[in-house]
Length: 220
Image (cartoon, rainbow, N blue to C red; front, side):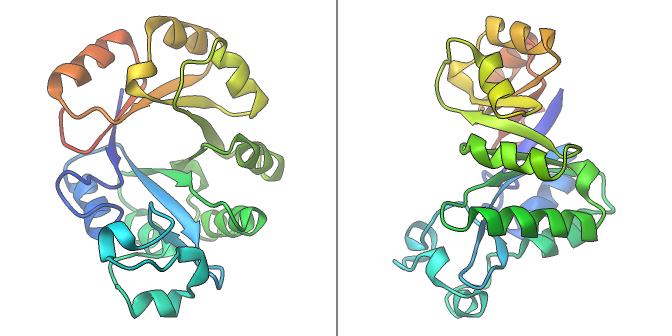
């Protein structure tokens, strides 16, 4: 089972920062989950929210700022290429969640370009709530591994994965059950859950048979 840090390891270091991702490396996580979106000038940054209000007390939206303009507000948001360059030679994979709403084609092209440039394609899992994005990624490169993000209990989870031409199923943990795991595994798909933040819950779902647990903390 993979131990996956949430937004780096956000319960210990500031979320989605290079510091948080490197802390996940130091703590022995197998993978770090991060969020990506594009600035106005087409730079892929690692950041969860669509605006800066929650973390930096600014109403500015990421999509309305160039990267240089963003730096005048904060220097804590890394470029995806900086993250990859810092961990590509370490024993760490990335689960990259695409948050993009506004420049879908642009972010797909730039993401694949960066993964190829830094020889990182084999160490990445790409996930999104927008399953059309995942299907488009597979059309561009069938070798890239993808996972549907789900916050419900579908009647047929396998059909959701197949429709997106994905490789696995990333679910909010309290919608997970043994039937989903069994059906996914029977069809060759992996199952990850988020966000599990107690040791008791982590052990429960580990024993249930999930393939990866995403957590804010170092529970194992």
